[in-house]
Length: 257
Ligand code: 4FV
Image 1 (cartoon, rainbow, N blue to C red):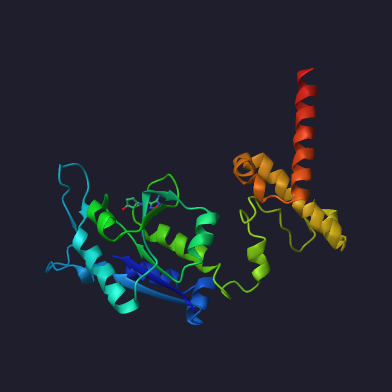
Image 2 (cartoon, rainbow, N blue to C red; image 1 turned 135 degrees about the vertical axis):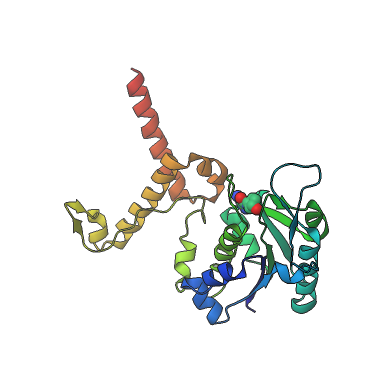
């Protein structure tokens, strides 16, 4: 069963353009994904297809009207069946992470609502939204990019979308770790050489080096991930982490002496 997405936006061409390219574009053409993009203006009963209005209580900017979103979700339910979740992407939402992406990828019908202007009328959230998701603590001009971030991150976990399933298994964050460094030809660029171990053909040493680099990078750049995701580490990774932390500790002690 292909993963169904319905995206509601005032810029359908922007979303459709994204869905033509790359892995997602190919999966869409091969019907591994079933994506429908809806123009919010079609659900406006206003003769000028107005979808926004002045904010009650005053203040800057415009607010998106509730009825068009409510109509759009009702139409989607009537035509495409009840979705398992209706997501409004907004800065007020739960922060998206790979764990959330993985849980969304277990569903088979997801609706994504894209806001524009200052905000969406809160009654949309009360009436038809299951959850709000944020892609990060910064403010964009529209929900289309966040909606496509959610769609792409979830769709690539769907069966057959990404050619080599191994690349999913080794994903960053899949196991609470950042990815190890990657290299390709040529072996020497202006004197910058590829680590010898990767040229050795010794697959066990390569595997161990990559694991060590992943733990080292995570400790250096994202210790918060190790704090939250320690239980995701296997015994070997835990040993590597201990060794690195002991080395670190010794270095600090020596520095203090
Ligand atoms: C956003 C985010 C975001 C807020 C007002 C669109 C903008 C504008 N959505 N994660 N960060 N949305 O900045 O999800 O309409």
